[in-house]
Amino acid sequence: MESQLQGRRVLVTRAVHQSASMCARIRRFGGEPVVVPVISYRKAELTEEDRRVWLDSVRMADWIVLTSKNALDFFMDTLDDPGRLKGVRLAAVGKKTGRALETRGLKADFVPERFTVRGVADAFRNGRLKAARIAVPLGSMADTSWFAELRNSGIAVTGQVLYETVPDVSSGRRLADTVAAPGVDAVTFASPSAVRFFTELLDEPLWRKVLESCTVAAIGTATARALESLGYPPDVVPEKFTAPDMIDALADYYKKKEGMKR
Image 1 (tube, helix red, strand yellow):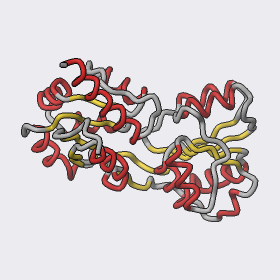
Image 2: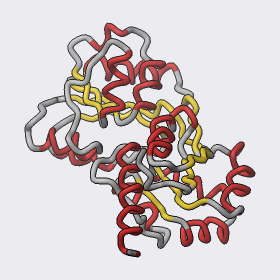
Image 3: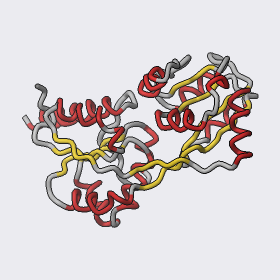
């Protein structure tokens, strides 16, 4: 068994149903995962008119861009008729989203090499993918700045917020108790919203102490920027923006750190 995380406790801030692969990876390296979710999700309320307009945009779209498994789940929950997807191509950001499509009997027609929405936007802008209309199911805190780039390229983009991303207030006390006690060695963040809610659920002196004293891992550049904006650049950012890769990069960080001591 690999032991780069042996004796280390790693805080996982993802929702429980999303953290299994991270926890398994942490244990593989000998570490102890501590799961305290800082995020929860709930279905957005749509008026009948909003719903009708959105479903019409899905039916008329050339491509639907699914930015996460959450986006896929809430999209399918809102979809009234799978027949609306006939002739529509699907882009999935990340292998996990692609695999989730397969469990529903669908398949991703495109998965960008770099698992970000920018990878999808670049494919449309450089002509690798072609579309007149794109529909994008969204969370309430989604980055939509890339829409403007596509619209400037002549593509009509329709986004609709289908779910709300909110702090998991039920975890607040446990989170504070966990990080206030000694023993947490590393903290992992899988989204910019996780960073934001981590700081909202904790008193400022406490979250600053944690980010100063623990090894901090961010799943990708957007999450890294959220930490940098607080004055705490992450110690670890994987080359591939997936949860298992983030844990691999964390293990490699400790391996190199131990090697420097010798």
